[in-house]
Image (cartoon, rainbow, N blue to C red; front, side, top):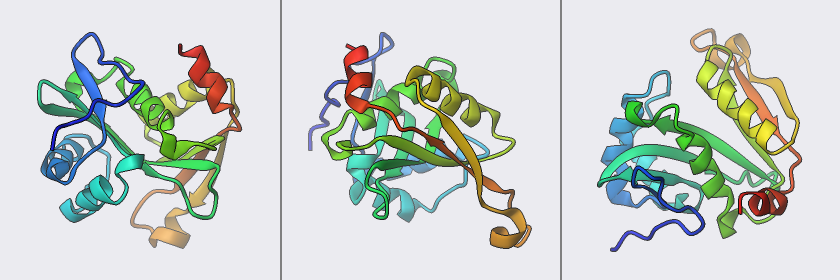
Length: 182
């Protein structure tokens, strides 16, 4: 099956293209996540399900046939105005170049995200890179970022994992953001 370039997301000057994942991307996604601590290493099966059942809500950044970025997400059934970012993984050679922001924007530009007015995710307190990314998106979109404890260390993880804080950016006007980007 030919790989379709993501509409509205032209390749970066470095030849990076954004596209929907396919099932055969599963091993490359799993390998990329394993190289991006502190991300949870999902099962290979989980990555396959995301690449098929949730392909409209996930994006691959590919350079010269190599997966250099991955964002997985979904529209929560209980809140159709939200887009939930599950994981953001960027290979070391792609970091610090705005790749994560461009992948998230390419997801929000898709028809499957029509009607989205806020972005949510969960982040541990010590994940400075993720907090910087989401604060930067909130600034770019001129939208508030709210932070609340969602899954607590003791109550939800029996002390085994740190508290996950929900970051909620919005409300924002997706059409206005898209127009500003040209």
